[in-house]
Image: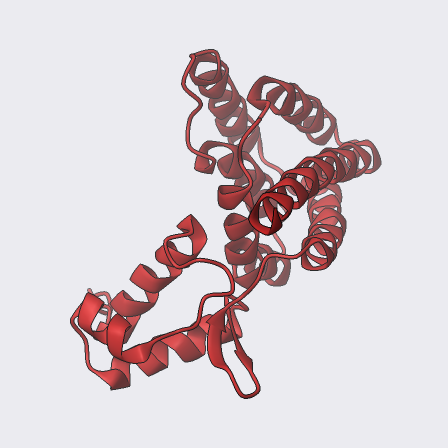
Length: 222
Protein backbone atom coordinates (compact mmCIF):
# COMPACT_ATOMS: atom_id res chain seq x y z
CA UNK A 1 0.00 0.00 0.00
CA UNK A 2 1.56 3.32 -1.07
CA UNK A 3 1.89 6.14 1.42
CA UNK A 4 0.02 9.36 0.74
CA UNK A 5 2.17 12.31 -0.23
CA UNK A 6 2.98 14.56 2.70
CA UNK A 7 2.23 18.27 2.21
CA UNK A 8 5.30 20.41 1.62
CA UNK A 9 6.07 23.64 3.45
CA UNK A 10 4.81 25.51 0.38
CA UNK A 11 1.57 23.49 0.49
CA UNK A 12 0.98 24.39 4.13
CA UNK A 13 1.82 28.04 3.49
CA UNK A 14 -0.57 28.05 0.54
CA UNK A 15 -3.38 26.67 2.71
CA UNK A 16 -2.79 29.24 5.47
CA UNK A 17 -2.56 32.19 3.08
CA UNK A 18 -5.59 31.01 1.13
CA UNK A 19 -7.69 30.78 4.29
CA UNK A 20 -6.51 34.22 5.38
CA UNK A 21 -7.59 35.70 2.04
CA UNK A 22 -10.93 33.89 1.91
CA UNK A 23 -11.79 34.87 5.49
CA UNK A 24 -10.71 38.49 4.93
CA UNK A 25 -7.77 38.42 7.36
CA UNK A 26 -5.68 39.59 4.42
CA UNK A 27 -7.91 42.39 3.16
CA UNK A 28 -8.92 42.70 -0.51
CA UNK A 29 -6.57 45.06 -2.32
CA UNK A 30 -3.91 44.91 0.40
CA UNK A 31 -0.28 44.78 -0.73
CA UNK A 32 1.60 41.55 -0.15
CA UNK A 33 4.58 42.15 2.14
CA UNK A 34 6.77 39.06 1.72
CA UNK A 35 9.00 39.85 4.70
CA UNK A 36 6.02 40.30 7.00
CA UNK A 37 4.25 37.15 5.77
CA UNK A 38 7.43 35.07 6.00
CA UNK A 39 7.78 36.10 9.64
CA UNK A 40 4.08 35.53 10.37
CA UNK A 41 4.05 31.99 9.00
CA UNK A 42 7.59 31.08 9.97
CA UNK A 43 8.82 30.25 6.47
CA UNK A 44 11.60 31.38 4.17
CA UNK A 45 11.01 33.39 1.00
CA UNK A 46 11.21 30.28 -1.23
CA UNK A 47 8.09 28.41 0.01
CA UNK A 48 6.28 31.72 0.43
CA UNK A 49 6.88 32.77 -3.17
CA UNK A 50 5.80 29.35 -4.44
CA UNK A 51 2.57 29.68 -2.44
CA UNK A 52 1.99 33.19 -3.79
CA UNK A 53 2.47 31.99 -7.37
CA UNK A 54 -0.17 29.32 -6.83
CA UNK A 55 -2.52 31.88 -5.30
CA UNK A 56 -1.99 34.03 -8.38
CA UNK A 57 -2.99 31.05 -10.54
CA UNK A 58 -6.15 30.72 -8.43
CA UNK A 59 -6.83 34.43 -8.98
CA UNK A 60 -6.74 35.24 -5.29
CA UNK A 61 -3.56 37.30 -5.73
CA UNK A 62 -2.79 39.63 -8.63
CA UNK A 63 0.32 41.53 -9.71
CA UNK A 64 -0.15 45.22 -10.47
CA UNK A 65 2.51 47.17 -12.40
CA UNK A 66 4.60 49.47 -10.16
CA UNK A 67 2.77 48.10 -7.09
CA UNK A 68 3.59 44.41 -6.89
CA UNK A 69 1.53 41.51 -5.61
CA UNK A 70 -1.76 42.35 -3.90
CA UNK A 71 -4.78 40.44 -2.65
CA UNK A 72 -7.36 40.53 -5.43
CA UNK A 73 -10.00 43.23 -5.05
CA UNK A 74 -13.67 42.34 -4.81
CA UNK A 75 -15.61 44.15 -7.53
CA UNK A 76 -19.18 43.91 -8.85
CA UNK A 77 -17.80 43.15 -12.33
CA UNK A 78 -15.70 40.21 -11.15
CA UNK A 79 -18.61 38.96 -9.07
CA UNK A 80 -20.92 39.09 -12.10
CA UNK A 81 -18.45 37.22 -14.30
CA UNK A 82 -17.84 34.56 -11.65
CA UNK A 83 -21.51 33.87 -11.01
CA UNK A 84 -22.36 33.81 -14.73
CA UNK A 85 -19.85 31.03 -15.27
CA UNK A 86 -20.93 29.22 -12.13
CA UNK A 87 -24.62 29.35 -13.07
CA UNK A 88 -24.04 27.83 -16.50
CA UNK A 89 -21.63 25.14 -15.31
CA UNK A 90 -23.78 24.06 -12.36
CA UNK A 91 -26.82 23.98 -14.64
CA UNK A 92 -24.83 21.61 -16.87
CA UNK A 93 -23.93 19.55 -13.80
CA UNK A 94 -27.63 19.23 -12.99
CA UNK A 95 -28.48 18.03 -16.49
CA UNK A 96 -25.77 15.38 -16.31
CA UNK A 97 -26.65 14.40 -12.74
CA UNK A 98 -30.26 13.79 -13.79
CA UNK A 99 -28.94 11.10 -16.15
CA UNK A 100 -26.25 9.61 -13.90
CA UNK A 101 -27.13 10.06 -10.24
CA UNK A 102 -27.40 6.84 -8.25
CA UNK A 103 -30.06 6.02 -5.64
CA UNK A 104 -27.38 6.12 -2.93
CA UNK A 105 -26.34 9.62 -4.01
CA UNK A 106 -29.97 10.77 -3.96
CA UNK A 107 -30.36 9.32 -0.46
CA UNK A 108 -27.14 10.98 0.74
CA UNK A 109 -28.22 14.39 -0.57
CA UNK A 110 -31.71 13.97 0.90
CA UNK A 111 -30.19 13.15 4.30
CA UNK A 112 -27.91 16.18 3.99
CA UNK A 113 -30.88 18.46 3.36
CA UNK A 114 -32.79 16.90 6.27
CA UNK A 115 -29.84 17.59 8.59
CA UNK A 116 -29.61 21.13 7.30
CA UNK A 117 -33.33 21.65 7.96
CA UNK A 118 -32.66 21.08 11.66
CA UNK A 119 -29.48 23.17 11.76
CA UNK A 120 -30.87 26.06 9.72
CA UNK A 121 -33.85 26.32 12.08
CA UNK A 122 -31.53 27.33 14.93
CA UNK A 123 -31.04 31.03 15.80
CA UNK A 124 -27.31 30.96 14.97
CA UNK A 125 -26.57 30.47 11.27
CA UNK A 126 -24.25 27.59 10.37
CA UNK A 127 -21.06 28.01 8.34
CA UNK A 128 -21.45 28.63 4.62
CA UNK A 129 -19.75 25.28 3.97
CA UNK A 130 -23.04 23.56 4.90
CA UNK A 131 -24.64 25.15 1.84
CA UNK A 132 -21.68 24.35 -0.41
CA UNK A 133 -21.87 20.63 0.47
CA UNK A 134 -25.15 20.25 -1.44
CA UNK A 135 -23.71 21.85 -4.55
CA UNK A 136 -20.62 19.66 -4.29
CA UNK A 137 -22.82 16.58 -4.08
CA UNK A 138 -24.67 17.42 -7.28
CA UNK A 139 -21.44 18.34 -9.06
CA UNK A 140 -19.94 14.96 -8.11
CA UNK A 141 -23.11 13.22 -9.32
CA UNK A 142 -22.57 14.73 -12.78
CA UNK A 143 -19.82 12.18 -13.32
CA UNK A 144 -17.88 14.61 -15.54
CA UNK A 145 -14.32 14.85 -14.25
CA UNK A 146 -13.50 18.06 -16.13
CA UNK A 147 -16.62 19.77 -14.82
CA UNK A 148 -15.92 18.55 -11.29
CA UNK A 149 -12.33 19.83 -11.40
CA UNK A 150 -13.42 23.22 -12.76
CA UNK A 151 -16.19 23.80 -10.23
CA UNK A 152 -14.31 22.52 -7.18
CA UNK A 153 -10.96 24.12 -8.07
CA UNK A 154 -10.05 27.75 -8.74
CA UNK A 155 -13.67 28.79 -9.26
CA UNK A 156 -14.56 27.44 -5.82
CA UNK A 157 -11.86 29.45 -4.02
CA UNK A 158 -12.90 32.70 -5.67
CA UNK A 159 -16.53 32.00 -4.85
CA UNK A 160 -15.68 31.31 -1.21
CA UNK A 161 -13.93 34.67 -0.90
CA UNK A 162 -17.01 36.57 -2.07
CA UNK A 163 -19.44 34.47 -0.04
CA UNK A 164 -17.49 34.67 3.21
CA UNK A 165 -17.01 38.43 2.98
CA UNK A 166 -20.56 39.19 1.82
CA UNK A 167 -22.50 36.70 3.95
CA UNK A 168 -24.73 38.88 6.13
CA UNK A 169 -28.48 38.64 5.70
CA UNK A 170 -28.37 35.02 4.57
CA UNK A 171 -31.68 33.21 4.09
CA UNK A 172 -30.73 29.54 4.51
CA UNK A 173 -34.28 28.16 4.78
CA UNK A 174 -35.22 29.79 1.47
CA UNK A 175 -32.10 28.33 -0.16
CA UNK A 176 -32.86 24.95 1.40
CA UNK A 177 -36.33 24.90 -0.17
CA UNK A 178 -34.74 25.67 -3.54
CA UNK A 179 -32.23 22.86 -3.02
CA UNK A 180 -35.05 20.39 -2.37
CA UNK A 181 -36.81 21.36 -5.61
CA UNK A 182 -33.56 20.98 -7.54
CA UNK A 183 -32.89 17.55 -6.04
CA UNK A 184 -36.45 16.40 -6.76
CA UNK A 185 -36.02 17.33 -10.43
CA UNK A 186 -32.66 15.54 -10.63
CA UNK A 187 -34.02 12.43 -8.90
CA UNK A 188 -36.93 12.34 -11.35
CA UNK A 189 -34.55 12.55 -14.31
CA UNK A 190 -35.76 15.99 -15.40
CA UNK A 191 -32.42 17.55 -16.23
CA UNK A 192 -33.83 20.62 -17.97
CA UNK A 193 -36.01 21.56 -15.00
CA UNK A 194 -33.13 20.94 -12.58
CA UNK A 195 -30.84 23.12 -14.70
CA UNK A 196 -33.41 25.91 -14.84
CA UNK A 197 -33.95 25.81 -11.07
CA UNK A 198 -30.22 25.76 -10.35
CA UNK A 199 -29.59 28.71 -12.66
CA UNK A 200 -32.34 30.73 -10.95
CA UNK A 201 -31.00 29.73 -7.52
CA UNK A 202 -27.47 30.89 -8.33
CA UNK A 203 -28.64 34.08 -10.04
CA UNK A 204 -30.67 34.98 -6.93
CA UNK A 205 -27.58 34.39 -4.80
CA UNK A 206 -25.54 36.57 -7.14
CA UNK A 207 -27.98 39.47 -6.83
CA UNK A 208 -27.97 39.22 -3.04
CA UNK A 209 -24.18 39.01 -2.84
CA UNK A 210 -23.77 41.93 -5.28
CA UNK A 211 -26.08 44.08 -3.15
CA UNK A 212 -24.03 43.32 -0.02
CA UNK A 213 -20.80 44.01 -1.90
CA UNK A 214 -22.07 47.40 -3.06
CA UNK A 215 -23.09 48.27 0.49
CA UNK A 216 -19.64 47.29 1.76
CA UNK A 217 -17.91 49.38 -0.91
CA UNK A 218 -20.12 52.38 -0.10
CA UNK A 219 -19.29 52.09 3.60
CA UNK A 220 -15.57 51.98 2.83
CA UNK A 221 -15.75 55.12 0.68
CA UNK A 222 -18.15 57.05 2.94
